[in-house]
Length: 124
Image (cartoon, rainbow, N blue to C red):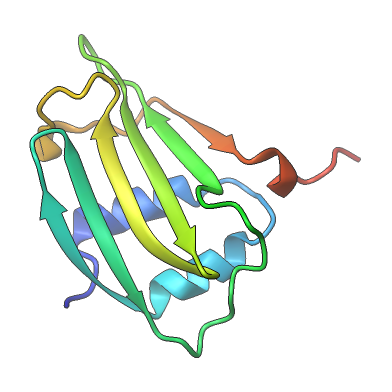
């Protein structure tokens, strides 16, 4: 187990940059976590071990937020936060077409966020 590395921290910061219900709880959980990572051909899995003193995420969504990072001349890279039992358990990073992922070449300058409908703030 280890803290997030610089690249992983950048990904988490970017995916949690938009507002949605429960965002601050997930940020707190991330700050109170250690991680392990597993790299496969088309997927990077960052597994979180959250300190159980952290507040629980009170919503039922398994994937409350997703980020799509558009790549030049390639399919997008998808970033999915998984929450199980009220705690962030994984940041899954994968290629949209299941091609080999090149972690050092992932660009996150052209992105879009997809937030679960139940976590969207109502327009005022």
